[in-house]
Amino acid sequence: PHATPSPAATASPDPSITDPPREGLAVTRVADTVGSATLSDLLTVSLIALAVFAVVSILLAWWMSGRVLRPVSVITDTARQLNAENLHERIALSAPPGELKQLADTFDGMLDRIERLVGAQQRFAANAAHELRTPLALQRAAAEIGLAGEPDAERVAQIRTKLIEISDDSERMIEGLLLLAASEQGLERREEVALDDLASAATLGVGPEAAEAGVEVELAAGEAKVEGDPVLLDSLVQNLVANAVRYNHRGGRVEIRTGGVSAGGAELTVANTGPTVDPEAVSLLFEPFRRAEARRHQLGEGVGLGLSIVSAIARAHGAEVRAEANDGGGLTVRVEFPRAP
Image (cartoon, rainbow, N blue to C red; front, side, top):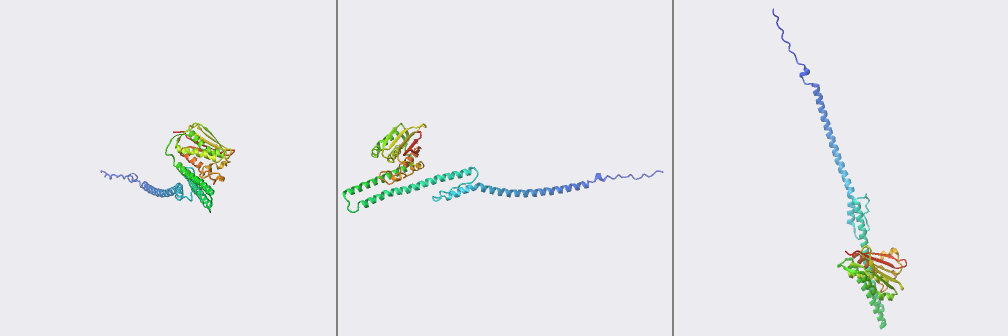
């Protein structure tokens, strides 16, 4: 008998091969979840850090800009508040060396110069008013007192002479003020001028006054050509020589020299044997109305504008004025002119 074949056994697949790895998938999902959370946390932290950095940057920029711009604000406030009453104020910026520090120091230097100029102008106006008032008062006193009652002819003649002298002083002062103003305005014309010729003319012109005062005038005229206004240069030489004779003593001497200098320009030197001058006060003699106090109100002794006019005319010509007190008394004034262009 034939045996009945048994049904063929069906092979079942290995679940480890056919089914996806459940444990690996779970691990992957967990890793993805953790990664997403980490990225989210990193993004949150980054945003917070960025916000904090932005706030700190803004605050730091505001603080730095305040420190940088504070000097500019100080300079602006100082400039806005300046007037004639507080020109003495300064910025005096305390800051490390830099452009703003240099700007503040330059501004303070400008204020120094402005204060000196304004002070000089105020003193000039006050002195001019005083000096112009003095001869007017003398004229009135001479007229009222001298002509009181019934003066005789001789007394009238004396009063007339005195009034003429006072008027001459006033006229010289006004002419000096006008010349000083003209010198400060600069030069209207330029031409070649011989300083030696001007010195010779000034020496001859001052001769009678020097002889009357007992002052000897010596001239050493070397060739000295400059370029400038001949009228102003003549006034410069005349004022220097006249001052040297006027502020002297009987038996004194005035030495006048002209010549060239090594730099190619020309020099005028006037020295006298006048009264002793304090070396520290020499620079003050070039201010208007500066003169010997003992001679301040004597007729015919000048009005104190001579050296001021000399200084102004020299500046207009680009010349340098130097003065020094002599050991035995008197003053030596040198005016050095630049080379003619």
